[in-house]
Image (cartoon, rainbow, N blue to C red; front, top):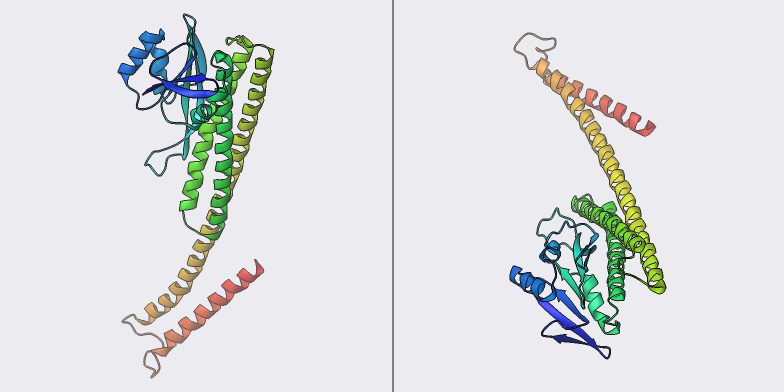
Length: 313
């Protein structure tokens, strides 16, 4: 689906066809016929439009016949029905600068473009370079918001994990860890892209715009550092809980071993007195109680030894 937006006197209007200084936003559902039509009308290479369909497309820029393509990764909620998948993934936003328009292509709905749309009335449509930088800003803000949400969610899951012995919290922490892996990879790729744009200056930025781009690089680095810190904290937490589970398992096995030994020795005594051969005391009136008393005494001795060692530890 293709939308054409124009900014007139700080008000956003949707128009029916691309005009000069318009923002063309392509959102799902994406159709090949619309790509072909848009490619012919705005003289955009078709592969620039179709690149957005690849969810694993890396952050990069490309120039073809003075048409510039910039691909940047942004976070999005994962709508997968698989309970083992990450809560959040990263998707590409394709930004295309034509001779007179700026085009954005999104394979999924994402918060960065929604935030940009909400502030589009404040943009100057003829300054397409600044519009690109503002999209970058919304992407970085989106990463920050999701990272804060992930950290809050992680804290709640850890607190619940201390109070319960269920596996659900651990599985959800693993899903958060997968989300952070996506974020770290995307933020590193975005950082390289922003640094290349600054060095090559393909957008032909002026001094103020270059300073704004430098601020975005710093903010992206901060988001990357936050993602790395949260990843390390989560990895340490999962390792600690894995050690606790292993220790608890060893303690349970140790208790079961003592219990097995306590039961095996009386069973051995009873088995010996249950043989069909002459044994000492089998003619006595209280012959039945002899193995019973011996078994109880042995059980008490073993329990006393176990409790004594446990108190020493």
